[in-house]
Length: 291
Image (tube, rainbow, N blue to C red; front, side):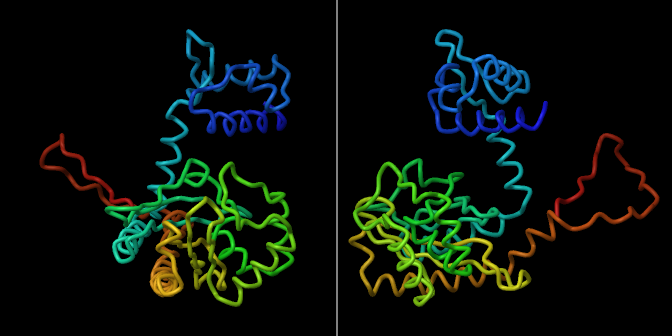
């Protein structure tokens, strides 16, 4: 498959991730500007590989769980879940709000983990556009502002402008609608040292966020930690308390973050030859721990 075909295949996968009920061949080809012959061939390849299935009565195409399982395997083996989830669970329990982690991937932020702290009454459950596995809407979230504020102004604005300030289906009245408005928000975020979104990402909600900085990466932000909930619970005093807890959790997570890279990226070493021990029971197999 040539480079163009590979890119189109990935675009089909991305398109189908937002189609929980599947999509027809014509619909897919129109959305991605593909000739039907090419779309049909690529879908057949994805079906053969087990990533896509076709619903017989309707003929619509949908993703199988194979892609999901690959993502979960990568996430678990990265070690990030072992590092982050206890921090998120504790943060959610201490604050009674939704705690979330987003990770920097190139020039994107992706939601990767969360913990719900609200046990009763009003609680914030993000819609699909703001949930785990989706890109963070940079200009409409405390998380996006907290990360971009760690970058040089020109770079941060270039990244934000590349999204054309695309607005989600649901947003609050205070969302930035111009580059100038967002630049002012980013300036305020730098001065404060944390990001705030009040009635922006979704109506009636609020959030605060801080960057997770990895010391061994020359102070670069590797992700963000945030707390979100109903706007009525995010008054000035509560926000101040949330920020204090977020900074403490982010410092803790940043301090252990290199473990993720050591596990996943450590250079391979030549194996040391040792005599293989004899097992008393030939049916018993030893397990090598995953580091």
